[in-house]
Amino acid sequence: MHVLLFDDPAIRPHLLPFTFTRPVAALRCGILTLAEKWQRHLAAPTIGYLTQPYLQAKFPVCEDGLVTGPALVINGAVCPDDLLVRQVQALMPGQGLYCDDMLVAAHLADASQIAELIQDGLREQIEVQEPVVVISRPWHLFLRNGVEIRRDFALLTEGRTSQPVGDVHTIVYAPENIFIEEGVKIRAAILNAENGPIYLGKNSQVHEGAILKGPMALCEGSHINAGAKLRGDNTIGPFCKVGGEVANSIMLGYSNKGHEGYLGNSVIGEWCNLGADTNTSNLKNNYAPVKVWSHARQRFVDTGQTFCGLMMGDHSKCGINTMFNTGTVVGVGANIFGAGFPRTFIPSFSWGGAAGFETFRLPKVAEVAERVMSRRGLDYDAVEQGVMDEVFKQTAKDRVWDNKS
Image 1: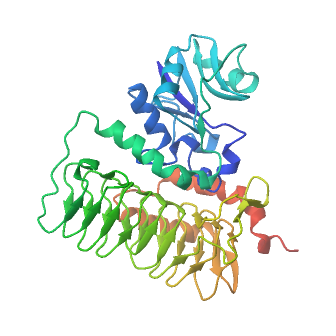
Image 2 (image 1 turned 180 degrees about the vertical axis):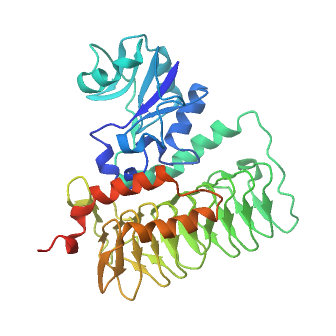
Image 3 (image 1 turned 135 degrees about the vertical axis):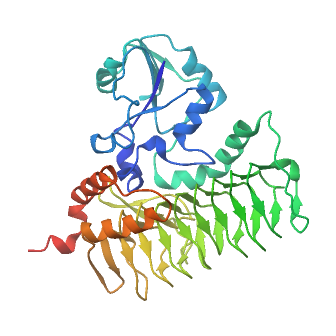
């Protein structure tokens, strides 16, 4: 049976800028992406995405592009747990599982019925036994991260044996809460898993003097640089490099924060780079709730959170000593530099800083992306270029300096 994760049209716009470049289910919260969680819970050989047309080439419905026969269709913003998975697996053809008015999952006898399902729903509706966890706003990712690390840790490590630390100079607290995959290298670090598990992914490295507190996930091929301080509830996605001080933050993958500086209560997309001594504010001086820019509502909205740092979309970068104010949102493909605090909403494909912005044109964006991705052995190909072209068009209205007559 096909397992297909769909972008809920009532949720996806509120998860921009991250969903400009990926389906909702490709967001990482905990150790795994939402799609990877469902794939493991359901023991599905593959997962398909029902997403925006311009993203479908990168995130296909299935390998050959054709879906026939029965399918489980699941809301990509919903985090699975054991009870919910059992309810989804128990669905009969024609039944839909709902949480109030939100479609959680449906069992279709014929996958060609997907369009009608999303538009009209199913006649036979079953209510979930317990309210489900929905990632519907960007800050939900870091708020939920500690819990999801614990759940994913249990899912990934059940019945398995960890590799040994293998370094006599590394200090370990609560070793029963630490799991090390093959190829991991640790040198003279401190691993404290007393408050939550620490997961070190395949071929990751923890360098001299680094301090890691759980819950903590270091995904495949990533590095924690010498002297780094990771204070808990952190996920470092695959093939990242991290230094300095990090707290309750997620780096989705392929991004670098290699030097000193503070990153707190933040989400950083893929192919980002934070220059040396970049700092984020995650708390206002008056302790008031933080407001952030909403692409969906085209205005600042109240997060209801006292702590909220930086939300940075894919392929964005900042220069040394950049200072991000509380609740800053940076779009896709931006390049920020210069003294002072830049504005708290930086549109996609911006070039500049506190002194002002101009547009970072697509040919220049492509030049940078080609160089950056080639360093990881990946191509900035026609599919990637097509995604960026479409995001550039969709975000044109945000670059107000180009819209002045």
